[in-house]
Image 1 (cartoon, rainbow over the protein chains, first blue to last red):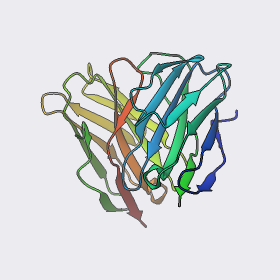
Image 2 (cartoon, rainbow over the protein chains, first blue to last red):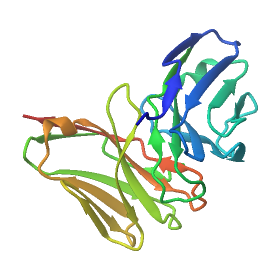
Image 3 (tube, chains in turn purple, green):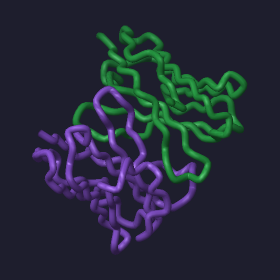
Length: 116
Length: 112
């Protein structure tokens, strides 16, 4: 079956611009996660959705970052006034159930964001 | 401050030999640990996990060992194959099940 897909695969933008990154989770998966991976680092948690609601957004670095999941499937990560330090690979993951720490998270290929 | 640490950035092993990847954690409340494998330009893929009620979990060529008192886990791959060459991430699940906390990864190179 289809895995987690993310679009675009690459995004180059200029400092100060607004970007949207999209994630299509595995069909039927309730939980959706966003992570950010900077060069030489492991993935770093940003936000977790349980259905349509953001159940844990403690990883969002500041209020320039926002994510939505209006219908409980596709999610969009939005970054306002981008900064060079936002350059990273943004990973999305989904898992079948919510709030079960033993559930496997399935990752998409990521969106590589470059802020010039 | 890193809660999950992989202190070896890289490891080189010959085909057929054992690969041992190490991971340390600082939070004694962590109960569930996972290993993910990542190829370039792909997302991480789940490899194997272990709950804190166990000290060993095995799946084919992959075995994970957990030493709770030392806050240490290791992944053993035997025999190693060239296709195992990838970045391996150790991760811990936070107690609420809302996030994985990853180490920085270890790049494994298996030569034939």
